[in-house]
Image (cartoon, rainbow, N blue to C red; front, side, top):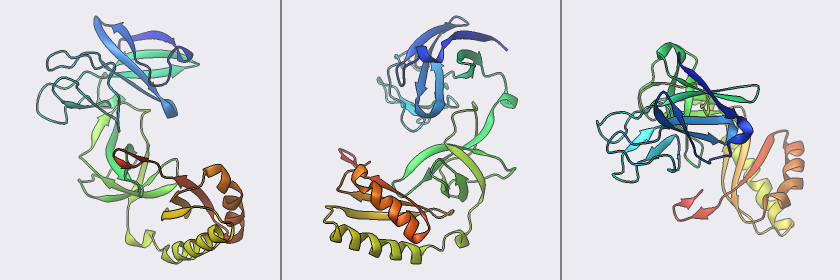
Length: 254
């Protein structure tokens, strides 16, 4: 398999495109937060538009000329049946960055695009089981936040390893979620505390994950002001709790 060293990891700024020549092809390399890398053809396979400067959103990028959307993990065109975009593999060994071809499905991992969380996040999840999921199926996955319910958004794809949001660990069952009593208890406790401490804070939603990690989505006070409350509530109720301040943009809550 053709492989080329393209530099040290410190030479690649986060979300700053770098274009390199590989096997007579111009390849755009992007380093994202969380150790994720993307490498894909600099030019759109449709009519050659420059894709290197396009923002990668939820693992996809949109051609600035005709609006074609491509999956940066598989290269698949998500909007019509035109040619897929060439994608490449990135590996980092002791700080050195290597670019290589995607040789075969044996070098790839089976993944699903999933939605998760109250704020409707999306990410690509690696499947560890020999189970086929369909669009709309519910499953259990491990993310950086904890163990939570996922909704499958498309059929499985074979993608370059290393860019997954998390791992699918099994099929979801309703008995995984029996946390309504905890949610109500915590809502009452926090609202009373906010009032007593005169904190200008409003709870939008309390998210209880399958492993009872608690995420409080709210508007109001800065997260640093809620640090002591987070610690005291965790000790008092015997749970792991974090606060997530909602921000409002043109598209709503983010």
